[in-house]
Structure formats: structure tokens, C-alpha cells
Length: 159
Image (cartoon, rainbow, N blue to C red; front, side, top):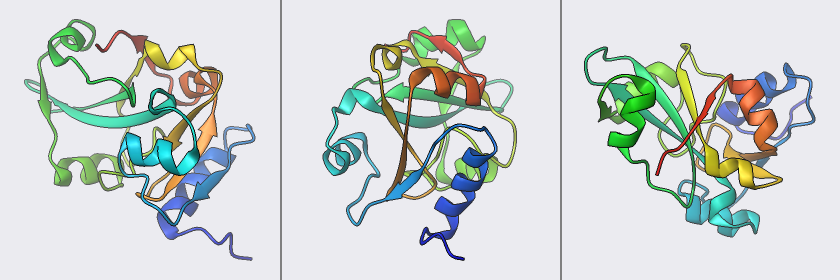
């Protein structure tokens, strides 16, 4: 039986099901590519959007995932102290190679390769947050505590 989700969103739903929480992917007709678009489609604040941003370690060339509040811009110099090296912007090809997803729909879990993950402390101020689910139209609702658990991410200051 088909879930009615697109292939990428279905992949994310399958990964979410493995965690044992009630996490359900929802697809919207409108874009959820940016934090503002997602907040508008969902009807929540921009601060409740958990945006998955992939950076590249300048010396290691390894992917680094920062899950930031949609209201915040990542201060790369500040984050360096947690990561242990300077960050570089990752291009679309690098993001796709390491996560299996295109920019605009990168979920916090289900990546093709393990990625060091850091979570914006501001997300913990909300009782519910929303994260991308594999496409620029798919999201899922969760709590900051569940996000920390399923990503095994470290909570840090990003702004």
C-alpha cells in the first residue's frame, strides 16, 4: 500500500519509524524549502523550524550538520570552538553526496553517511519543532528532546 509520500519523503518516514516515536512526515503543496516558507505552510513561528545546514570542515573536509533554529544565522566563528576546525560552506553536490538529499529538504536523520551533528540551543526553548523530511515540501513535527535523541547531536550556541 502506498503512503502517498514522494520517494524521498517515504525514505525519511521509514527511518523515523525505526526510532519508535510517533513521527509522521507531512507533505505540503507549498514549498517548505526555507524556514520562512516552512513556518508559513505549517502555521508556526520561524524559530520552531529546525533547519539542517551542512558545512564542511576546512581541514578535515568532513561534513558537519548544524540543526539551527530557523530564526538564527549560524555564526561560523563561534561554532568553530565546538567543532574544532573552521567551517566552509558545502556546495549542493557535497550535501547530496553525504546526506543523500538535496538542499532545501535535508532531514536531520537518514543520511547516507554518518555526520557529526550539532543542535542550536535555541530550539530547546520550544515544546514542538518542525524539521525537513527529504523534499522541499515535506516536514515532520517533533520535540527538541526527540531531535537530540535521534540525531545524537550536541546542543551548542550557534548565534
